[in-house]
Length: 169
Image (tube, rainbow, N blue to C red; front, side, top):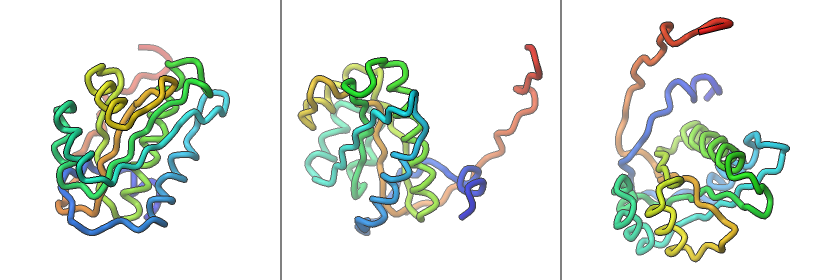
């Protein structure tokens, strides 16, 4: 799949088959995340892969938009490491870029995925911190539910020339 096609056809997928995801595919997705741009090229991300069913079933108790995790084969938590990037503002942007790269790679590799926001919602952040026993220097930023899609969605047209501004408002 070409890059532009992946961008314009990617959709948030919330229903998955029970098929396991091969470790080589997971590595490719993580590699795509690690190739994201980052401020000062610090690459402050850390990735936590969740495959334990009990953990996946626990997350919807504190994250109201994560019901799909009850049936997803796995999730990946994208977190920022404050030891690497002290500026939380940059760390959030860097982890967001990594998240988008991983969503696009997942789609291009035939998987379905959805971005679940964690930061800045304190109850979601604390839930992830407690569940995954994250150290104090790690900020959970986002999470991706991942699996083979059990639904198909078309991309609505979102291009809006009224939102384009040249040289000034």
